[in-house]
Image (spheres, rainbow, N blue to C red):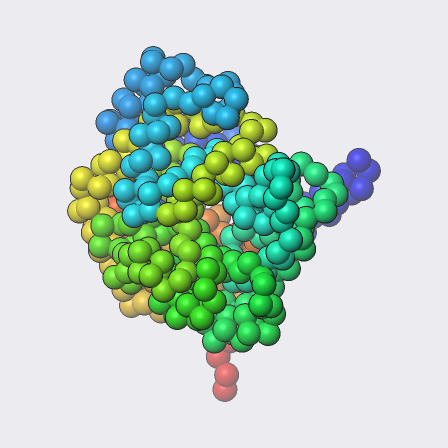
Length: 425
């Protein structure tokens, strides 16, 4: 462990370690936090939560979780393939399928496990089956800025999870330029072979840039490859884009069925930690045969199924979103308002969604900038080690104009305090 100790010491000395805060109480977007290093407590207005529709403290959602505990307990203590599942699982899968317009859905504990299970199922199938031989190679094209759960799954795509060595057909992974459909087309033309099984995978909304994948153009390219699979990670798209929050297909006025009609197989990953006030993830498809493969993937049978209170909270949240699309409209109005206020004050906010990355001048350390904002009672996420330096602001449906104005005013004050631009003669 000596190497670890030396590394962490240098890490701290370089100022790369994140500031750690402990939450003690939350009411709406007002949070009482403790700075772990000093024990100092303060009440702040948060702009770093992913509770985009404000359902995390909704009474109906909390009650659903409580009722599930009373009926089923706190955990299922096993997996559905070995010990069955609870009816809440089936209800949640049906609700997601209706929401995403794809009839077959499989639940997972989180997005990382869902993505790994999908790659396992698609590339390596499951256990050996008599009189069936899997010989076709897989080509996967991935956006260079995809989320870490995708990157991790693809890094381990060479063999099925749980095996150090395998004898499956080869999986070839290639990256294409961010949101560049022309580069996607070039790389498919360059790398695709006649008998390849082809998958293209992308975030729908990119978590560090706040921009949206060019779905129509991607479908145009992929329609030339009959049977190719398009995976959309809708972690930051569900509940936030599209008139009723259904995600990227609705945002572009499309339905998954239109992809199917063009010879493209649409798969959607939904996560519950942002819009659905819970935790967990799901893969949805129109291909019924995919579901049993996902159900027996190593990331499904090597753990436990989604706990009852978590399942119930997600289920009730999605039902609320479907009943009350005005929450989505409010979120989108807040996003536009905040972006306009930032622009008025000469901040460079990139992207177009409620994930609002603000690029600071190179001379400003995002970590120090965020610390100064804390002194004004504003909590944002500084990004300096997992992407290009920036402040990541997330606006939600509960933020008022007054709160957003307070954020921008504090950002201006701190910028004036820490940034002294060089004036040329």
